[in-house]
Image (cartoon, rainbow, N blue to C red; front, side, top):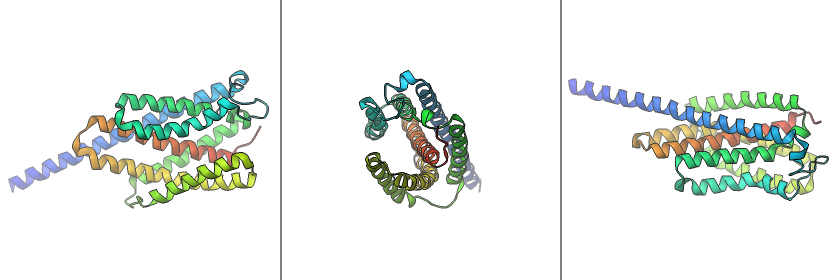
Length: 245
């Protein structure tokens, strides 16, 4: 009986350690994501509110990107693939630095919104996105429902959105843009819940190994995933709800 109690106490202690570790891990994920978001919007605001800086990337009147603007536009997408390929060769500190560099580049690519949309509507859509993101992420974290099956469907949806968005750059169809925005909000809402649950499950599966380097890099990757969900949901909602200048 005493041996059973000892085993049960040890198991309970281990479970408590994992729960505490999970909270710390998720706090690091959300904290890193928040710093990246702040960096993105500071860069976007600084460039977007300065005609001189914005003109380096776009025509201030038409907002059409120049060569450097096209590079900045597609750089975040290239960096995401590069990050995924290089994550195993990076240290946790290197991964964090890469993430912040990515967030700054993303700010450059989004700077045009401060000319195209009113400041009030940007703030309003940001608030709506924040509330929606918090609710979806909380549901993904707390739900007992296994939503891992959503992954392949949602990733296929993201690929379709990327292809459709690139095509519509040349077509310039408002109807296609409206449809893309509606689908984009739905897809990234689903990804917010899915990614949160997946980040949680990943930690629980690897927590017993105690690999601090892996846990550090995993938190950065989790921050990147949720950051992308937030940014994309924000941009699609801005296209739907934002008031243009």
